[in-house]
Image (cartoon, rainbow, N blue to C red; front, top):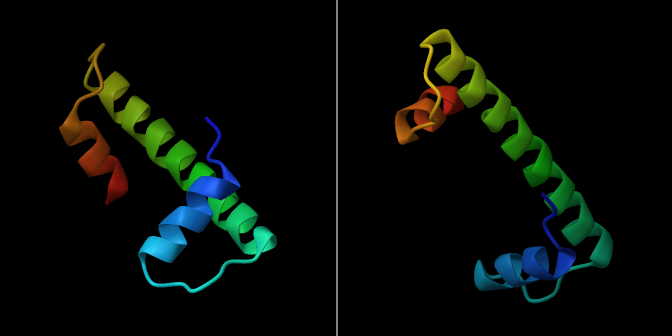
Length: 65
């Protein structure tokens, strides 16, 4: 999954930033991609422990804790 710098600039501006450096948008995208990867791995691991084939909302919420 790739989050674009354009999406990050838009997000930051929606939250009140007047302007955003390209490097800041790139870094935020990388941080979010890493976090998404971590949560995904945790949710999959929890579902496997429960012998589930489908990842559910509860798996995501548990992984976030």
